[in-house]
Image (cartoon, rainbow, N blue to C red; front, top):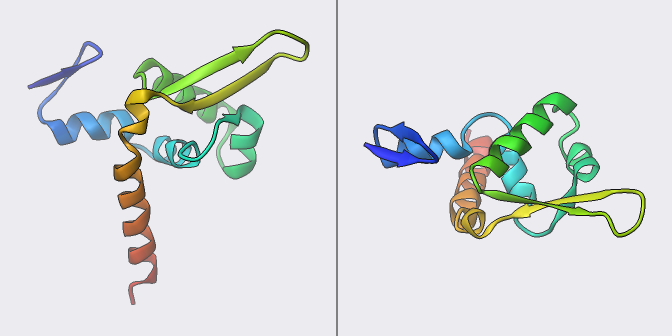
Length: 109
């Protein structure tokens, strides 16, 4: 058994998929590989995700320590940016491999 953030997983692959699995988490992480993004920038990159789903997935990723949420309050309007955390950056090779496989599968005839 593997434990992460108080939750138990039967194996390390299960833990990984528990943190980054699902329809939107990997997409969010992929978009954060190269730069910090604001909520609306993520929405534009993912036009089919609902606002509620995006908010919930960002919160889960933040709770798991995979992304950072930085709030800038020095001058109005309030500015919030999301980026990969140090832990999240360790996922970059995995995310790139997932994207490469997806491209391969999409082009397979």
